Image 1: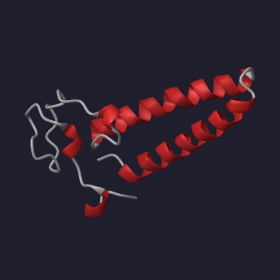
Image 2: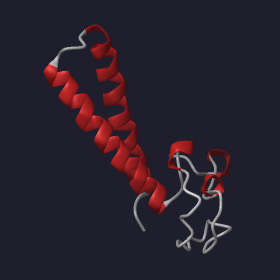
Image 3: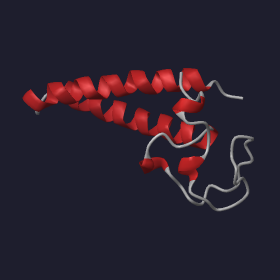
Length: 98
């Protein structure tokens, strides 16, 4: 099974980069290097979010997919059925955190 903690850590890292570059671009909106870094970071974050959602559960409502019913993870109460995937996986108060 993939390492949930490692994936979350990578997501945290790339999210930090995006936030930092966003703040910089607020005052330097024409900086080509910063624009490129922002675009690369945004794409990588999107990729990581999709990877996490496919392997575990959605982290944001943007990743909820009601048609992801093929997975049969033991933490999913509705595996094999079309369902609201936001409820898949352990919540932070159930040990679903780093």
